[in-house]
Image (cartoon, rainbow, N blue to C red; front, side):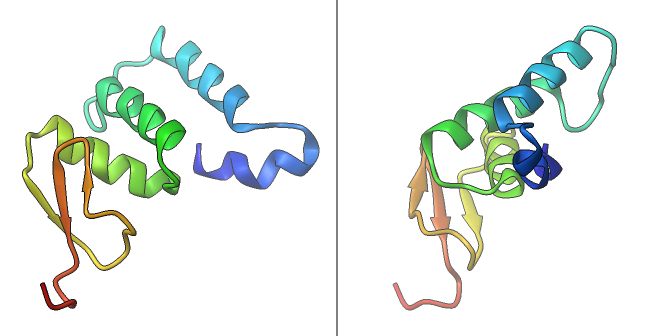
Length: 91
């Protein structure tokens, strides 16, 4: 999924990559990340300006009922009830 951005100049876009992942869901069993995390990451990527990996981190936190994510890399203070805190900034 993350690499699909590099293929955009060749006509392969993120929507096509998600369709391919949907096809894989039919035949692959995954342990981690779960398909639920991948589905949630897709939703987050569509609603927020997140990179693929940031979307995966947030989706995994939400699926695991994590309340606070500590990171210096996000421009958001909250996503879908997940508090996002930059530990290097004063409150």
